[in-house]
Image: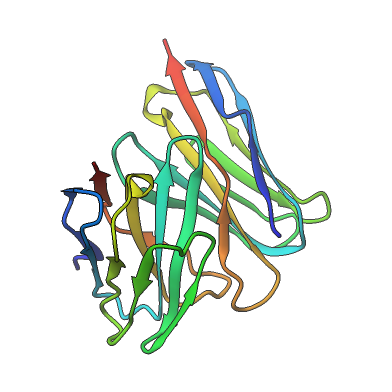
Length: 112
Length: 114
């Protein structure tokens, strides 16, 4: 059974500083997704990572994937208040019809 | 383009009542799914469908039924509501379960069972 762990579950960030959050998974996977959820809202797709060493960047967020370590990182550069949200990673086991398993999410709060 | 539309947005049920949560997408997506979100639990897959006429169970299917008679619609039926089904329900769709197909989520239905 695929297990997806995110840590930390809550992170208080100071504006302007850099942070990294992590997503670990337990079995072989060929794709990993990052989603963002604002309080009381739906989930929005941020990144799709499909291969070992894949790196995607959007604004102050950069996601990377190490399939050998079964680890994805989401790096935040110079945190700003607008990045306050809950971030989920979702992983599918290798195979065309494998379902996604979500982590429990990491809630980021950016303080002045 | 409406995307994924869920109705209702809010619902209160009494224990034992039944209801259907509606989900429709206008993106011609083959894959549709239902998740429930509970505090501290992330999202858990209830049922999913890879195309019209095909459905399968996810991680937490008990107490729920689905059908997929058209590509566009994927309703979720609660047969006899229980307080444990109090949750936020999300419908999500994608072109396929394939590699470069992120899920598109609806806005959710907040269900309370008393």
